[in-house]
Structure formats: structure tokens, C-alpha cells
Image (cartoon, rainbow, N blue to C red; front, side, top):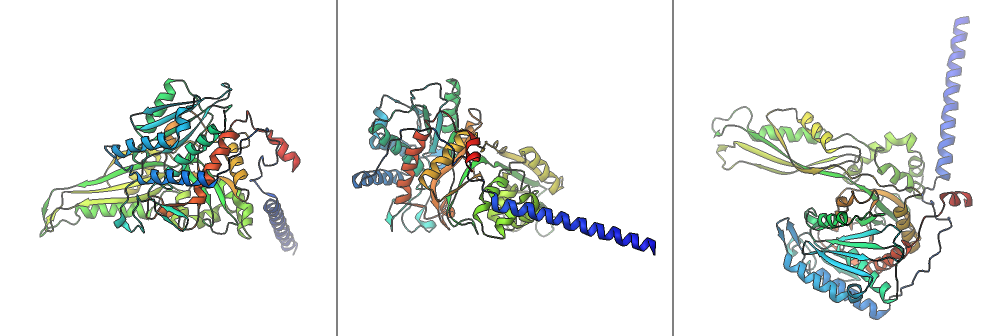
Length: 519
């Protein structure tokens, strides 16, 4: 009886201890749920006062800026491959820039040069050379588009429908490009002279790797000993109604890019007649290897890259129970991980993705093919390296008859800082909140690649954000059909860059402690 009583006491103590632990965990989780608002940051801090010039766009200016933008869209600056680029269109685009922005090209503050014949580099002199410059990037070229693909209008018509301008490049990437120069044009006309000098770089071959445009711009800057405070390029945007369950729009600023690789898998066997087939053909061997890759995806790495901070900093804008879960990823990380990997669009954020994009084999219906080839495109998660991914592919296939060849590839980009001491991130964030007060700002990761990746030797701070507003269905317009931008969004984009350029004249960020104190 004594032993059974002792056992009962031990069980009782264990249950009580477990309940206390659960209570403590629930209390901590509840406190975090109702107090966590990572978006506040430096919002309430004492920012350095600057005499910003106000730009008001009147009807005449609006008509002119839209006409120039439409003309830019109508020029088919298509890049098909590194050796097939529409250079005639690029020369025409050069003429348009000079015509549309005469003050930029004639100002004594601005030095302009052509790079690799078709790319553009602008240097805008600052009055305080001790302030480290930054660079704003965009690209001139676009991917191909044909009306036969299902466009509602000809893709290079810049036709206006219900307040939207349709055309290839309206989002990617001629609106930021024209918006940056239009903002600078307005500022120079009003007599603006920056304190912090800056650069503007427009590559002409981003869609095929940027090997001529962006890489040569970087080479020039390196030769001149230039180091940059930060880089801002295309990438993420303001998402309105895109993230399920999120209340209000969110501006995601990309702080990294996934790496990329193209791998060729091949199987070579002796050819033969189809009337006497072996147990396995080259196609069968390769198909089995591809099936193993699809059945065994790369490991789920949620929490090891910047995607963790994205969800945590958006948590306060979700309703319960999501708000409770996202505010306490330390507790619910495994649960969220499983949910995210169920859909292709969110699965892309949690792992290296594997996509078999080409499969070639066979020349005749009655001939056993001697060669079968498949191409696999991989987008590499921030927590993995290119070599780790290649090793995993080899191990997953597990068949020496399947040869693997790396066609091209690169590691994920370093993760840029997004804390309260990060000048570039905080200036971009402040400008977003100044222009769009209802927006929540958070760091994010780009699953595509941009020209900014070539600038990693010039700065540790590379950000990817365009002040475009994306509603449901808009992300699919990128490289898809019916790409478009609203006239209002384009106008807001210009005013965003007007504010950003002037905000960058601040010498330093406010003390991070001041925001905490005021809270």
C-alpha cells in the first residue's frame, strides 16, 4: 500500500508539473501574441529633420509622364538569350531617355555614361562626399511576349483599359526605371542638390543573366574604388490581398535571393530495335531518376532563412488563431512548416525547389534511343549551398547510369541586415510608411533573381523592393500574359522615389532606444 501511495504521489507531481509548464508556456505565448509588433521599429523615434522638396503632379505633368512611360513600353527591348538581344530597340530606348529627361542629362550634378554600349550608369554628386553613396537599379530589357499567348491587347501597345496601362515591361521593369528618372527630373527642376551622392544603374540584359550590363557596371565601380551604403533593386512589392488571412497590405523588402542551378541528367546506352527491347531503356532509367527527385523533395528549412522573420513581423496583422501561432514560432514552428509546404507558392519559401523543365529522347518510333536527357531547374534556399544541393541530387537518384552535369548555378545571396541599425532597410521602410501609412513592412526573400546579385562585392546591404501594388492575380502577370500597371500606382511610384532620394540625405539613423523609450 505504501508503494502504491508513493507512486500515486509521483504521478500527481508529474501531472501538476506538466500543467504548470503548459500554463507558463501559454502565458508566455499569450503575452507575445498581444504585445509583439515588430513593425513599429523606429516609427516613433526622433528622425533627423530634412527640408524635403514637395512634388505635386498637375494634369499637364501627368499627361507628359504617362506619355513617356507608354512610349517606353512600346519599345520592344526583348532579350531572348545572351546572344539574341534587340539592340535596335535598346538604341531607341536610349534616345527616349534623353528626350524624356532633359534636365537629368544636362545637369552639372549628374554624370552619365553608357556601359557595354547599351546599359546606363548615372552618378549624382552629393554636397557631402563623406556620406557613403547608394545605388538604385532597374533594367531595360524584357522577356518575349506575343499576342497569340492570350493577351487581351498587343503586348507592346501600352494600351490603356480602365485606368491600367497594359504591356510587357509595365511591371518588370520599366515602371521603376522610368519612375526613378522621372523623380530625379522633378527634383532637379526644383533645384534639389543631394547631400548624399548616389548612383543609378540600368542594365540591358538582366533577363538573360546581366553578364554584360550589370556586371560591367560593377566592374567600373570597382575600378573607381566605389563602396556602396546599400543597393535597391526590383524584387518584392506591396501585397494587398495576396497573403491569406493578413489584414491590410504588406510591403515586403527582399533581403536575400534564392540561389539557382540548372542541372542536366543524361543516360547513354547502346541503340537498338524496338522489337527487342531490354528490361530498361534509356528513357525508363531517366524517368525513374526524375520520379525519385520529385518523390523526395529537398529538406524543409523553414526557420533557417529570412522567411522566419517575415512571418513573425507580420504576425500582429493576422486574426486569431493565426496571430497566436505566428507570434510564437518558437512553439509552433513545426506546425507552420507542414502547412506552408502544402501549396506550391508557399512551399517555394521553405525549401530548395526542384523542377524538371525539359525531357528529350528518341528520334523514331521503332528505334531504342541511345540518349535520354532531362534538365532540372533548382532554386536554392538561403540555408543551403549549391554543392550541398548537387550532393543531395546525386544521393537521391542513386544510380550510376545517370550522369549529372551542372550547366550553370550560383549560391544563394547573403542575407542583408534588416535590424534597427540598417541604414538602407530603415530608410526604405520609412519611405514606404511615409507614402503608404496603412502598410505593414517586413523583410522577405526573393525566389527569383535580379541584377543586384552582381553587386555583393560593393556592399553587404542589398534590398529588393519596388513600390508596386499587387492584388490577387497580379503576381502571375510577371513574365505572363496581360502584364499591367495602374496609372495611380505609377504616379505613386514616382513620388516614392522623390521621397526616398531625399530621405537618403539623412546622415544617420535615430537612436534605436528612443523608439523603445517612447513605447
